[in-house]
Length: 293
Ligand code: NAP
Image (cartoon, rainbow, N blue to C red):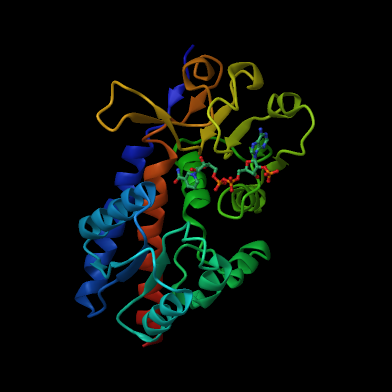
């Protein structure tokens, strides 16, 4: 039997709808959630991500303080803008779209954002709070994955989750979220140093692929009945498309869906959840700022 396709597009729309309702309530109290999105340069993937975020802000009724800067912007200029936004009480969240041009140190930029406005959840204070189980802004993609699992009723308690990828933005934080007491999975993290990847992925009740390489996970690497979450977003040439490319994940979807019990498609799986969880974080930042008033 073919797997249930997890409709991340619809689940994300439901999250945005809930955020929009709570945003309207907060606006009535005089606090209007506002996100500053900073884009440096014109990397086509980044432009499309930023446009998606701007669209979502409008949809949920939040203020959008988009700042588009030329590729030549210096690190000093960017840090100065972040300082100004940190001090601006009408801005609740600051997001710098990554990757940045090579002459700008990403770590320095992430560290410059006030943890209270770090709605991406990348600042070491938020990462540290996540590690020790304190309240933190959760990174959006990993949090979105947990919401997908919860919404679909996929049991994590006692499940063996295998995460392929150990990046700071996906692999590591999703592994941490899966091991939290409320999620309670047993997690194995794989990377390029992993020997015999297939023998490990085949043990997974929940398999998360966050690799960035098409077809890294093939059907024979999946345990029958497993839930497969494909985080990968890869552009592959496709002459039939106007853009000349199409998006695929890290999983060989067509064959994997015949083995798995649940699977996320690419696009319209994990991707829309990332933006929805970002909206939720901005709302939370604005609610915390409102309480502190
Ligand atoms: P990344 O920083 O490049 O990390 C990739 C990870 O995969 C690394 O830990 C790497 O191992 C591991 N890896 C690479 N090849 C492997 C292989 N053959 N076997 C086992 N492990 C392997 O990428 P990322 O930022 O985590 O992103 C991963 C993918 O998710 C990308 O396609 C990205 O575009 C996508 N993504 C999607 C969203 C979304 O909203 N849907 C958000 C973020 C990222 P090493 O550490 O050993 O190098």
